[in-house]
Image (tube, rainbow, N blue to C red; front, side):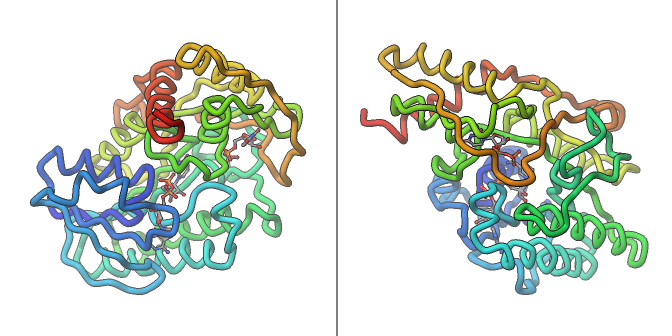
Length: 316
Ligand code: NAD
Ligand code: UDP
C-alpha cells in the first residue's frame, strides 16, 4: 500500500514510518518540522519506498494514497503552548484537510488522538465511554479541545460521508527519538539524571501517569488501522501506573546503573495549571478487538531510551 504519515518526522511518526517500510509499504512522510527533525528519519531517506514532503497540514494537499495516519501536532505541553492558536489550527484544520483527502482518494484514515480528551479524569482508569473533564479555557485547552474537535470531525465525516476512519487515544508514550528538550517528564528526567542535575518534580509528585514504550504503541496503531469492523475510539497505552515521584526514583536507579557517578537529587517545582491528577488506560477494548496489549516492560523500555539519550546528550 501507499501510506501517508503526517507528523512522520516526529518521535512516534518516525517509528511508524520505519515499521511500515519494514512491512513492505510505500511511505510518504509529511511534516513541517515544527517539533520533528530530519535526524529522526535520516536513515530512511535513501530507502526506495520512502518520500519526504515538507508541508503544513493546515494547508490542503493532494496525494494518491491508500492509508493516512494523521499524527501532525505538537505533543509536549511546552511545544503546544508555544503557539496555542497554531496548535488548535493544526488539530482542526489538519483533521479537515486530511479527512477531505481521505474522502477524495477513498483512503482509510487514522487519527492520533490522546488521553488528554479525558482532561483531569474523574473516572479511573479511563474507559473510552468516559466523556472527560476538560477545562475549555485553560492553558492545555488548545491541545485538548483541538484533539476533541478532531475526533468530532472524524466521526462526522464517517457518519455524513462514509469516510473509513479509525481513532486511537494514545496515552503517555516514550522511547528513543523523543526530543531531549521537549519538557516531557521522561525526556526531562533522563536528560537531567545523565547530566547529574536534580530531577524537577512538579508539585508533590503524587500525580500519576502510565508509560507505554513506542514499539508497543506503533504495533497497536497498525493493528487498529488494519482492523475490520471497529473504528474506535480505542485506548492505546500501558496500564502500569506510577506516581511521578516513583518514576523519578526509577530513573535515578536506572541511570545510576549506567553512570554510577551521577549525583542527581529531586527538586520540587510548582505544579502547572490543569495538570491531570491521575491517568491510566483501560485497554479492554484494544485487547478484545485488536488482541493487543503492551509487551515491553518499563525497565527494558527505559534502558533503551536512556542509552539513546546517553549517546546524544553526554560527551562520549
Ligand atoms: P512530536 O512533536 O514528536 O511529533 C509531531 C510531529 O508533527 C512533528 O514531526 C512535527 O514537526 C509535526 N507537525 C506539527 N505541526 C504540524 C503541522 N502543522 N503540519 C505538519 N506537521 C506538523 O510528537 P509525538 O509524541 O510523536 O506525537 C505524535 C502524535 O501523537 C501527535 O498527534 C500527538 O498529539 C499524539 N500523541 C502523542 C502522545 C505521546 O505520549 N507521545 C500521547 C498522546 C497523543
Ligand atoms: N512533570 C514533572 N517534571 C518534569 C516534567 C513533567 O514532574 O520535568 C510532570 C507533569 O507535571 C505531569 C507528568 O510529569 O504531571 C507528565 O508530564 P508530561 O509533560 O510528560 O505529560 P502529560 O502531562 O502531557 O501527561
